Image 1 (tube, rainbow, N blue to C red):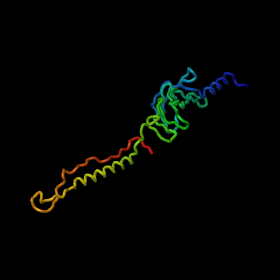
Image 2 (spheres, rainbow, N blue to C red):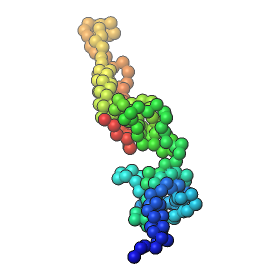
Image 3 (cartoon, rainbow, N blue to C red):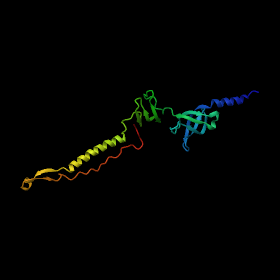
Image 4 (cartoon, one colour):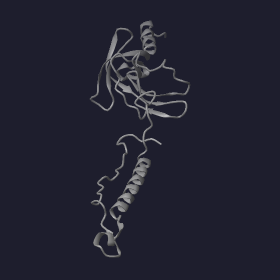
Length: 199
């Protein structure tokens, strides 16, 4: 008994279309996974295709992004899309050394790790180092301590005067501080960023 040729062609077509390139036409985010309308095989489209991403990474792809359309066992009703990105949105070609890279979106790096082990936030090359809150607070506390010592010295400063010159009699005495006491109102607070940590 030989299989029907039409039946074999259907199986072969499903095998051939189990993994194809898909293009995102529309996205929604009504569920925990982005749902996409994906065009594949030049003129066919599937709706409500789940977009699978690696553990710990979540991005909603842009319309026009391309990825791998996977139909397990050829069942396009259970198809998923992986690794979707829009051509021209990747930040490659910008003198990136081997081993360097990071997280990007729409052609711009948000987090970049360079060959020297530096993490740059917000761009491929950060403009300045992030302050470490504990170190800045320690420095501010030291400055405040010095200011407190100066205040104390100023507030308690007196002059020894020759009383004879002032009252016409012999002896010495002390005069009050030359100015009202200094009031310091500044107290250092933690300069910690609310959402960025670095070591």
